[in-house]
Structure formats: structure tokens, C-alpha cells
Image 1: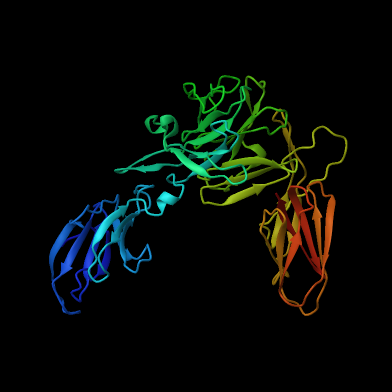
Image 2: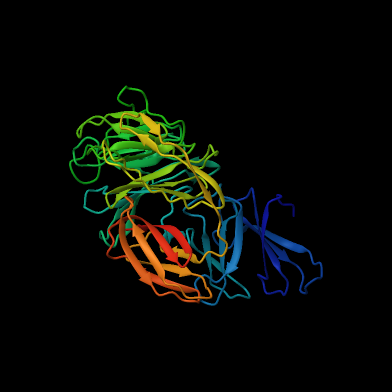
Length: 480
């Protein structure tokens, strides 16, 4: 039998003849083929005497897009191996129905397979294609945060892709959310031809008490949907494509727009922040009113953020938030890393000296250069003088991990071993460099884990100074 150069093979004795038969999948075929061995003893070079190219033909055959691979394994713990089939392709297979289970109603010696599920395990999870983009919003106005998921794309048989939104209602509670599937193609985006990677951003920009919707598109532009409802599930107005700024210029960030509505300047109005393909963030300030938003471009590269320097496919996936009255930013990227930014808020117009602290977790040995950028609300900016810092990497550092981080009530500090026990001092500093708390721990000569209580600290980001003898290190700890 000839096969494509891409073939999957499962060897098993399916008829209890004493020799192995073959179940094969092919890169260009959606089914499985059974080749039956004519022999009765191993290593006899016996030929394959029959084949079933729609296996198992005695029941509903396996149909799996694309490039199926078969596995003989007991998945329900009844002592009998079942048949699993799943695509051997990562970018050309169905997303939600691609793990096919046939239960074994026979024996391990002579299995009899019966179709059971086309989404084994997948039915128990939230699955929305490649590059899922979740956001939370009270979609049906019941006081609970629901889940809306954008994505890079869903696989669409055969050989096509589409980007859609999925909706899950929260049928649990604020403390214990339980998400129930509602819709896999919210707003019928599969028929809208908007390209790949549609990114939802919700926020009330017209002051009527319900969330409106922006969609960031692959081409870098935005689509706006006004929410016309007066309560309950949204009623969406017809979409406004190429949504424009206050000068009537279409807002565009070149490619892969990732919008967020967030009051960056803390004036009570939602501003528009947009991550883009090259890893920058565009800042559009809301210069309108609470009932009529109008967005003015202030900075196309806010804070000179560059998620993956030198990589033009960074795909900045942004999330600004406030904790402890301070603004923070997490940004995902194409390679799966998450970058964290703090000390974002400015001090405003003041004659009082302002101190800034920055913790660079990427420092190793060498000379590093830093400067401050002062950005005003009108888009103008200036730089401080550049300072240089010489850093020497320390071998066999005494202090190890701090986990979990972020944390709520406590974290664990690991330390190494040393010849002489030294007390350990842990000092917490706020973002304004104010000493908030100091803890003294009894040192040990052995490698140890110390639990550090943090219930009495307000939510925020703290610079933590760890000192034991001549060992001094800094950590950044986020308290939720």
C-alpha cells in the first residue's frame, strides 16, 4: 500500500492472531485505514492480506480533519483499551471537535469499537480556537461578570480560517463564577469578513449605563458597536467601520489592533489604548464628555513601550489596571511572554521633588543605562539625563525564589545554605519609596523556606529589600 509521506501508525493485534496489524492515518485523508496481517508468528515477514480504508467500517468510521492519528488506550478505566483519534496537525484541524473517542465494547484481545464522543475532554473545557483573547463584562446586566472570548482564528474545514467571538454567561456568583456556553459566533462575525484576530474591548463611552463595544481588527482599524439596550442583553446598533478620532481621521495602528478602554489620565472619562503588531501602544485621550466620547491621539508609542524589541511581530496584548491607587500594565506578546510595567502615573504639576523607583529584573553583569521620560497630557515630553549603573552578577546568590507573586496573604522566600546563621531583614517600600514595613527573621545555616505574612499590606506593588549579612537583593512583589 502506498501512502503519503506524512503517515501515522498504530500497531496492535486487533484480531488476536499473535502478530501486529496496522491502523494508519495519512496527511491528506480524514479517515483511518486498517491493514490486517496474514501471519501467525512474529518476524515472519508475513504480508498484509486485507485492508479497511474506512475503519471501523462495521460502525460509523472515523472522520477527523486533518491527518488523524490513532491511539489504543483505556480512557474510562474499565480495563479495556479504547480507540482515540485526533489530528496530527497543529494549524489545520477542528478546534472544538477533534478528539474522537470510540469505546471498546469487546476485549483487549478482540476489541469492538463503538463511537462515543467527537469532543472527548474538550466538552469539559472552554475552547475557542487559536490565540484565545478573553475579556470580562457584565453582558446581560445581571450583576455578574460574563466571559467574551475573541481569538486569532478558528479552523474552518476544509483548509480555511475565521475569527469569531464566543460568549459564556456567568451562572454562578461573584465569588464563585460558573461559566455557561451561550454563543460561539457572537455578532455573526464569521459572516463579516473582518480578517483574523478580532479583539473585543467593552466600556460605556456614551454615559447610558451599558457597555459599548470596540473590535480591534487585523488591519489595525477599529469597528464600533453602540449598545442601545436599556437593560438586559445588549441590542447592538449597526457597526461603524474605520472608527475615527476627533479630527475625523480613521484610527489605525498599522496592524493587529488590541484596544482597551481605560481612564489613563484619571479625569473620569474612558480613554482608548491600542496595542499593535510591532509591540507599541497608541494612546488616544478622551477629550469629549461622559455622554459623547471623542478621542485625540496623544502618543503613538506610549511610554516608548516595545514589547519585543526588534521583533515586528510582537503583537502587544495590553491590560491596564489599578491596584492600590496605582496604575499598572500587563502586556502579552506573540511569543507568549508577559511584560509588567509599573510607576506609570505622573505627579502632575508640582514644585515638590518627586522620587521614582524602578526595579529591573533582567539585569545581569554589565553596564546599564536608564533615563526618565516625562509625558504631559498634551503629548509633549522631555527626558532626564541618562545615568549608568554597573552591575556585577553574583554567583550562588543566597536569596532564591519569592512565590506566589502576585500574592494576597503571604509569600514564601527561599534561601540557600551558609556556614554561619545570619538574621534576615525584609523591608517593604511603596512606589513612592516610603518604608512601609520591616520583618526580622531568624537565619539558618541550612537551605530554608520562610513564609512572609502580607495581610496587613494594602494592594499595590512593593519593592522588597532582602538583607542577610553582606547579601542584599531586591525583589518586586505585587500584593492583590
